[in-house]
Image (cartoon, rainbow, N blue to C red; front, side):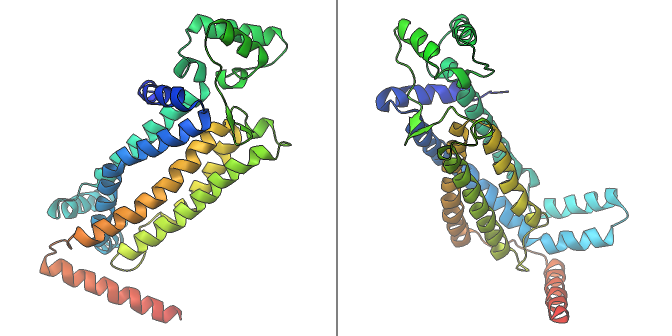
Length: 294
């Protein structure tokens, strides 16, 4: 499940060794990972931009074959093939990002394994020592800051991880520390950043669409992503909230930057005369509907 946790740890460990701050290490690694994935962001936005240019044609096919899904899929694929559009090109970057997120989850939940490189036996011994002290723990991140764990790590000749980030303990979870108002800061920032990202994404999609409207599903994602972020930042360690906030802020900058590049360099699709007429008719119908609503 945590396929990229090992490779991420190889990047995280030397940076942590240099700055001795778990929080700033997460921030720096998140920035580096997002810089490395800029080509994927460009690929995804180029694919989305191309798809939006022919979206009115797809909408037309949806109406025409509303009762025949198989025929609709066949005709839609013909349109994609005609204009060299691979609908999966926008999905691949999302899959990579999901694997990166899961990699960070693996590291954040198992810092003794991935950052300090302790063996399974050593980690179990620490867990038993913490449990013997009367603490109920499930994940490594919940007990690696405990005094018993720190004593054991020190005896092994290793420096305990510094989880303090601007006065906030990144091992804590909001769901278990509701009365600690410091803990609320990073999750709230993560949710606000996601709201901003959703609105910016919607605006970019609408601006690049030939009819001035975002693709289907844009409105639902506008609400889904902030709600999902709120839930996960509530149940996960604050370290994950810090990753999510940092990553989202960088992604906003990437979206704006790559959108400018794509607008400057991407040419309109070489539409056939018939498809141009269909798109023009679709725009006229859309404008007419807007006028009628007024």
